[in-house]
Image (cartoon, rainbow, N blue to C red; front, side):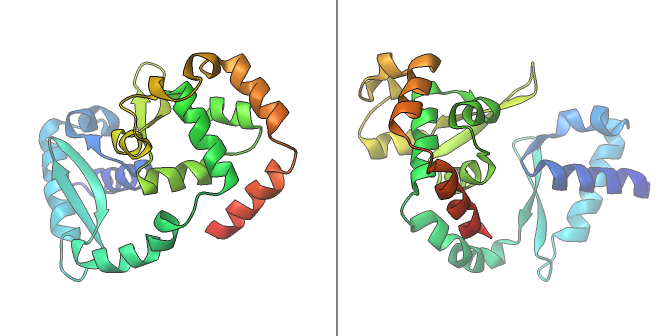
Length: 197
């Protein structure tokens, strides 16, 4: 196997950090289908060992780098505080915007909130409160509430949330955030970012 193909696939999977459709790999790597199939087999042989922390998972015609299932307990312990701790004010604000504006992009969230939302989005994704979808047409990732979180709120859809019609428009939500959420947001945001360090 050409080491450049193997290295390219490995780098792509590491950089993307989510499942990739196997059918898209030949075009992305500028190689033939057979070469992709062989590269996947070689990566599985390289990584899917008991003593390796990284594994290659293939499911439903998609491929992704994952952690070794044997280390699930260690990872659960590590993420336990992030998953079970109370939501911070910036996380609640972001979750509220997603609930009333879904699907919403990171750029739209940051425009409304006026601060970087990367760490908050990561935290909400880890907790299973939101999910990400990629719009292939414009390569933009958007975020929506998960069905599990809607069930946790006791509603069947976001439209059942209080004042949904009123707050669904961008201007009304932006006005609400500006009038009800003080300048201390940036300090709270900094505190939240520090808690992830």
